[in-house]
Length: 101
Image (cartoon, rainbow, N blue to C red; front, side, top):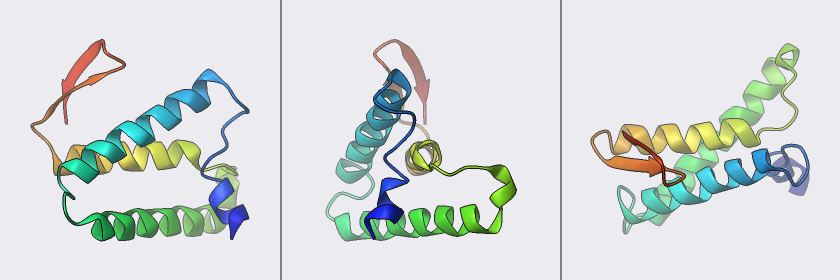
C-alpha cells in the first residue's frame, strides 16, 4: 500500500515545485477541514480517498498520458474541491495573489 500512496508525495525530488505542491495541499486541506468539512472530518477523508482512487484508476486507464507521479493532480484536486465548496471565499496565494474560490 505504501507504493500507492508514495505516488502522491513525489514530484521531482526536494524542489520548489514539490514545496509548492505540499503548500497547496496542506493549506487548502486545512481550509476544508476547518470550513466546509468542520465536524465532518471523516467525510473529507472519504472524499479525498475517492479522489485518490479515481486518480489511480485514471492513471491505469490512460497510460499514454505518462503521469507516473500524482502529486500535481492531488494538489489540483484539493484546490478544486476547496474552490467548489467555498466559491465566494477570498484567498491569497503565497501572500501576494488575491482571488476568490
